[in-house]
Image (cartoon, rainbow, N blue to C red; front, side, top):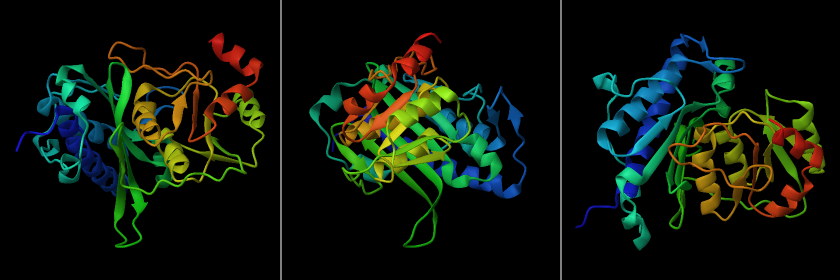
Length: 305
């Protein structure tokens, strides 16, 4: 039997790593010793962030040395304790039927964007539902696969914690049930902690029936994917490529769109700037309609940043 394509193997490794990173996150939270370090304004880092990144990027770097792997935390990927290294792979991913184009992607052409713990602020505050692990894969600057792991998702069947959603563009999305939103409502989901007048003006321009403020790009995307929201909108700089690459890949796999507020897709080349300067707008339908509702004053404020 021929070996699976390199992208599929990397996704299989990462699905496993994301789930085990979730175990490390829960373990550290249970100790109560988060060892919070303030990286900047509203930008904390905990021991769980550090351990999860060492586990994910340290393992991927050893397993796939030709790929470019970029993580949120500034840590040496070669300095990984042996107990954090893993070679486990998801058999479910390896068994997926794949299209011929995927074979043409080479390891050195893949860029991996990793947020080991998205929603750190909420994690430190005890809002664990908002926490996700994000691993996104890009080829030629475009998202081609994404993983969102929820460490604190409670499975109804066995009461176990943890769920992994993933998608590969052109193949499918797995680990959850996608629920298209109803056409007669507008629920906008946005930032919990970085509210400004510009952000508020953009939200109000959507004429929402309801506004939901939660933390973490990953969690916002999950609510969008499961039909609990219609628009994910953040009209400000602040998110980074590791926040959006995985999310955009899964949204795109299911026919939705994740762009900046001008309707332009982010680029994920290895040399690109990390900050999403022009905000985030994600929808599963009618994307252009919502782009056109962004006020010109909001667009101008971001253009001047």
